[in-house]
Image (cartoon, rainbow, N blue to C red):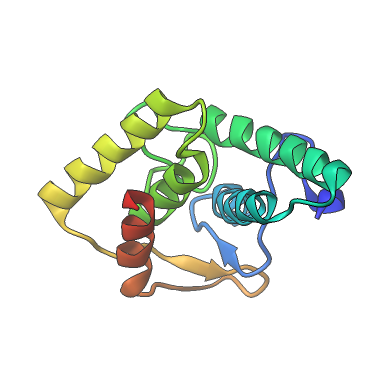
Length: 150
């Protein structure tokens, strides 16, 4: 896991991309997912202090990356300055929730609420990274939105 974390703290997912990213990558998606999983892992690890410290450093770097690429409207897209989606915003909020990014999370939740009230929940294209075969899944925005609210 550590060897795949980018210098800026992000992870690039293999299967999911963003069609608006110049390289069709989606570091927000990858980073948010890995960060949330590592946070859960740290909670369950009690016996390995050195592993816990390593994971916490990786999580902190990932959270700094996520906070740095939030759009001015409170949303997240696939990376910095990419139009926000419900999926990516929900995942970033989930990864940052409960830590020292309260105002960042609040801005993300406000954007999600505004999107929901004005446009409902609609799916955005999530790509099959290596083939650039773009598709969307109607349940992705709903499940990710609900995950952010929990």
